[in-house]
Length: 531
Image (cartoon, rainbow, N blue to C red; front, side, top):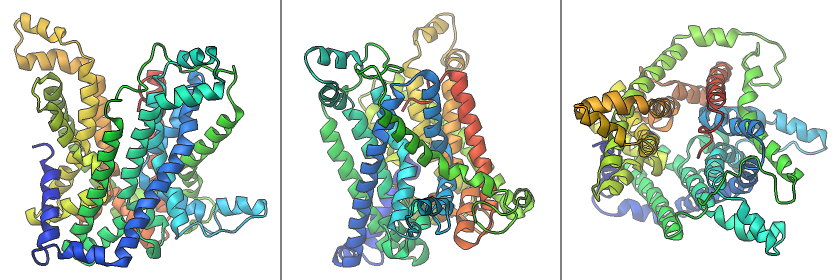
């Protein structure tokens, strides 16, 4: 039932692909007969592969350094990853629009060393830069999660047997980090396949990716049959990648998880931390945080332009944000939808997690896989599926439609968070309560819920942020009378030069920064950085 809001639309999408405008495989034949469509498909695949490779090359040394440094430095490195991770993608992409423009900061910096100017915006270069920045946290977090559990004494043992430090790293550490490499690569590649915002905002219409083509076919051309077929093809490519990865990891699920002691804060085998790692880490951190930070001074410009640095200063755009009916209305709509979605997703996801952990049924694992579908399927595919299904149900442009879709997206994160927490809970505490006469409801309310409160709050925050930041599905479900803040920001960026976007972006960025920093210092960085 929990995943029905996504599974049924996906099935309907497949049906539409073979039934519209007439029954048969005509839509698939049209796609594969078109050299243009095949070229776009190939461009999408190799773009996703290139983004994955660059993220791995940048993310691996960054995650490795996180396991070597002390607690405070590691906390700073973690903040640099988590702040952009929880900052709206719209905010980060808009930051890149400012940085990459012909008169932007990057071209100015290149001019100082006699290079440029380069066309970095409105082409595939801009798309690649933006996608790498958005996807980097998705690579770093799984890598660090795996590396943090590798026992560094294994490398010491290898060196004692005659291996050089580089040889020990190559033959011991690198193979043990393979699960993190695979997990991060799959997450980035699959996410890149269906990513819409970056190519749409930073790319060129002449270098479209498949996600843009699908969006245009459905929303602009109303060609539901061909658009659905393209969505199914993209989904099939995703499933092939997941199947291939599953075959690679079968039988080695524990690789890299052996740990006798934490490696955090230990130097390398040579007794020092390589300077190159520090330089790479600074470069990666700059890539991660610069797009959001650049918007803070821009939000105080006195002119209706995106010129950086501003020539004059003013708070007029903050005043406009809080007094304009459209902006404040979209903010209130986002808060309302996100709050409702978070409450429902937390309740349903927690109950589902409780059933998964406590059930002894052989169907537990398949049910968990079904619940995770919304996090595996490319976002643009889900958007097309939900739009077609909700059109039939009359839920487009309705708060209830937004809440159902956002709840389905948030439930997987709640289930994962709550499952991890419940697995650490001692069931004997509930048995003790039962022996004292408490019924099942009282056991959950009086024992389980209080002990699980940190996990419940974390899951609720995940659900709220997931809903508040959602753009693609909301673009399809919007109406002239109901538009969320990310959709309003996206539309404003596309249609006009309005620094109110910078003011809204700064507010979102500051809220994310304060929340994550307080969380890290409150927990000592123990939990927030776990992938």
